[in-house]
Length: 136
Image 1 (tube, rainbow, N blue to C red):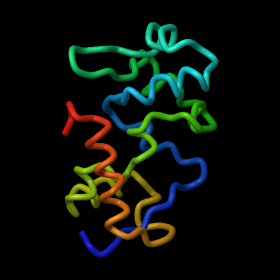
Image 2: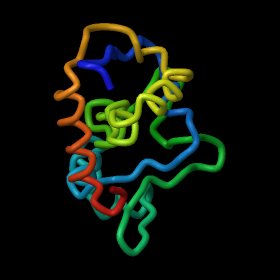
Image 3: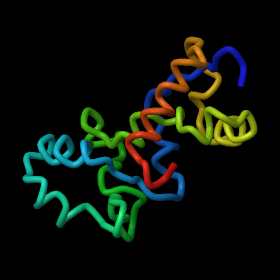
Image 4: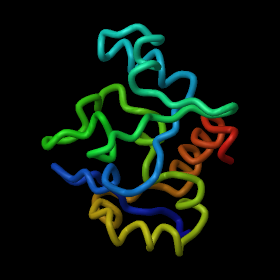
């Protein structure tokens, strides 16, 4: 990648939320999200989380990509999962110009806004690696 990248979420855009794939959760996501919704972590897990042996992710509703995506955007935006908060500074995007450009086809915020130093983007990518050790 270059010295930096431009990125700024665009008002009203939810394209990242509409892509196929899973939203994985970190251990810190669970209590933050459940508190935001006024639920116990156990109740939140029963309703919204699917667990495998070494990972947990949000359940995918039959008729939507995410239980929290509404017409006006993310209904839990202040408490959204780490994976969502860090997008598009995921390791696989920050480390590959090709993947960054491929993602920019659906994300109108890529190439917009202020220049973000590549080291700042890499720090966020590192937070992804640390938060999701089973994925990276």
